[in-house]
Length: 286
Ligand SMILES: Nc1ncnc2c1ncn2[C@@H]1O[C@H](COP(=O)(O)OP(=O)(O)OP(=O)(O)O)[C@@H](O)[C@H]1O
Ligand SMILES: O=P(O)(O)OC[C@H]1O[C@H](OP(=O)(O)OP(=O)(O)O)[C@H](O)[C@@H]1O
Ligand SMILES: [Mg+2]
Image (cartoon, rainbow, N blue to C red; front, side, top):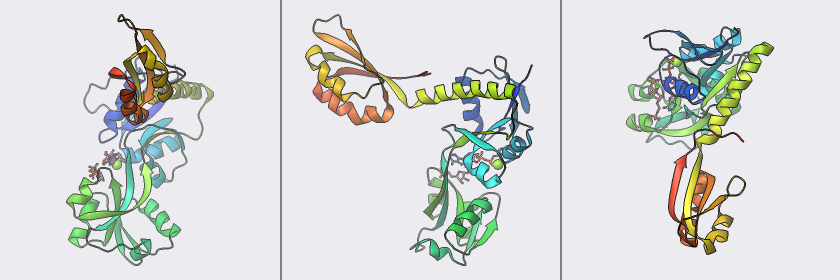
């Protein structure tokens, strides 16, 4: 049977979320044997390779793997011929330039002739070129944030998420050069049969993604307040209204994005809604 070959990170920041996404898509993979580098799904035509994340774009370009889950930072730094097919919503971070927290940084021009340490020379060079800045790039493979403190460089360009690594190393973030999250990449040529398997996988991923920032919201309200509450709720189509056992009251059910929920909750309460419940949604097919 034809199997779609997927490359994911063996261990590291993207591993758990990659496996979790497959699970949420209803795909069972057993990788119980420690250090096993390959696994086959038991209920979907998928074979999973566990690799270093930096190697994934190359494998996918070569067709050794048909698709991969990997950070956009790694994809664009690698310059490989692969197609970003779907963003996956995890591994969110940004590639930023930072300098010592007491260094003045009026604008990007102040990087002229400076030495910048990074593991992302391609993306950094592109940014410098776009801004017509000449700077010396010093490539190192990790612990980049330590570079200014030990006199190795004047500035750094590295991944930032919470900012705590920068803070702990006495650095300030001065430019965001790329916003990144994990993405599904695809090999340049895929057979028709494999494309059909990929379409099925993409449908499942999109179904899971749609549900992720949506909430199922239930609330009780007196019947004479229903109309006013419904006007406030930006529901999917129209909310479901069910009578309560208590005379004159109803239960309103609707689906809201997390954002909309926070934005409207005060207003809904003020108008007269009570006993508001917010539940996660597992899957959503619309
Ligand atoms: N602080 C962070 N917050 C969120 N996502 C991050 C963060 N740092 C990195 N990432 C994302 O996770 C990816 C993997 O990070 P990780 O640190 O596991 O990489 P690695 O050490 O190069 O792993 P490997 O051993 O596979 O080469 C990064 O390429 C990036 O897309
Ligand atoms: O802004 P923060 O939340 O502090 O995250 C940023 C840090 O996370 C990443 O390193 P990671 O912890 O993955 O270690 P690594 O250097 O071994 O990849 C990145 O290289 C930064 O150092
Ligand atoms: Mg790596």
